[in-house]
Image (cartoon, rainbow, N blue to C red):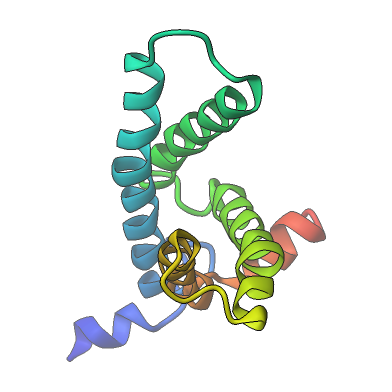
Length: 142
C-alpha cells in the first residue's frame, strides 16, 4: 500500500512531480521512440529513388522527433518539450484535418479515421503531464 501512496505523492526526486506522472510519460516516450521511430528510420534508411521534398522533410522531422523521444525515457522532465510538440502537432491535425471530416460525416471508414483513433491516444500522456511544472519551468523559466 505504501508503494501506491508513493506513486501519487509529489517527489523531491522528480522536482515535486508525482512519480506516476513521470512513469506514464516515460512509457509514452518509449512508445514514440520504438514504434514511430521504427517507421521513420526504416523509411529513411531503405528509401530508394528521388525524394519529394515535403515528404522527405516530414520523415526527417519524424526521425528527429523519435530520436529525441529516446532521451525522454531517461530525462523525462527535461524532454517534456518533445511531448508538448506531440500534443501540438496531433492536436492541430485533429482540429484541421479530422474534425472537419467528422463534422461533414466523411470521417468514418476513411484512412483519416484510423489516424484520428491513434492520435486520440495522446489524451493519456496529456492527462499525466505535470502542467504546473510545465508552466513554472517552460513558461516562467524558473
